Length: 442
Image (tube, rainbow, N blue to C red; front, side, top):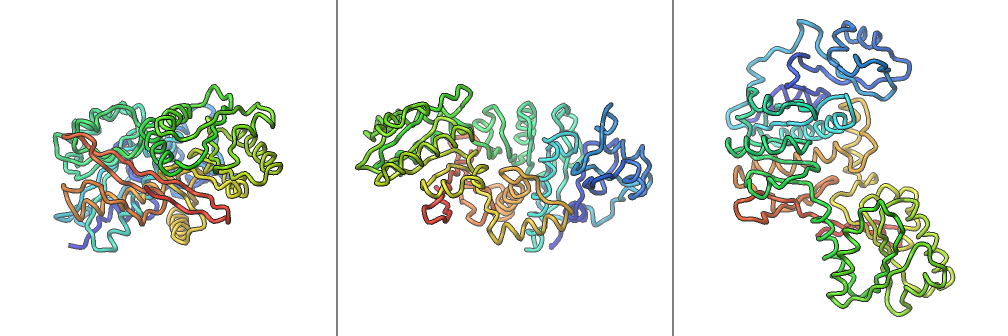
């Protein structure tokens, strides 16, 4: 039966439903604050009282609160006008029942980012609906201080086929037990601690720990650049966590007999030059992802290659460097730069531009300036998991890579018998010397 609940359609048209916050009623939509707007004016625009608007947005009641341009605020239904459930709101028989257990609010950055992620998920539901798929979505607002046990007893939770969430590590274990007891798939979309995935076959853990991620990066690096002279630059950054990668990489290179030299960001020009090979191509690796140190090293490479143009120099970086590409694009391409990541946001892609236009049209605002773009992450997760479950049911294992992803590629493996699935997708974003950008997907 072709069906998508009216509940989902309403949300997909710019509404966020915080079902767990029952005391505040149903959210009608979200409003982006413009310059010089006031709480009274916004309330009047939507036919609300100031009390109704403040009740829907608890942060407004905090002493010292001020309305700021660009903020998003929830717009509730006026008292007595909340949407009434009709037969159209009841999921069709056989519909895939999707639950969302995330902080869906406007109180802090976590909530705003998850609202954007949720919107992307709903856009995926809308596209699957156009394919004739039957999906019903319920969402529960579960902030950091929520008692998740109260959410787990809400109507509809136990009937879900798949749940997306939670955001916070302390909420994972109760939800893990819940989905295992009820035969529900659980997609943990973001960074968490804990190893519940190792003993729960119902869990898909999207996030990769730094140890796992950089372990894969080091292995692919050592294979792909085995004929290079690797130059590791110590950047004297005591706060850096990239030693996890460079330490492992140096040991791996030594085990495989791959040449590697170490120099320092404070070295003289002559000492710096001695670390490079005139015979082999050179691959430069920093032990920090910070922008100031990157800029200093790029200046040093400019001086080195200006004096020794015969040297072949490439650069290997970190996911954070994707944020610097707008400023350093020319030098990234000059030094044939490779950046490991689990995503790539390409603002020049026609598919990405179409998605951004559609998002702006539906929600009357653009996406937040984060990498990755959270709405696109939600969309890619929705298309990957929901289509997979619609096609394969409980047998879906996430093993096939979604090559049509807008930004976030996924590929799951089950490392342990009786455990769940971990995402092991990895890509290198390659800034080519001809000023093109290519994606190497492993």
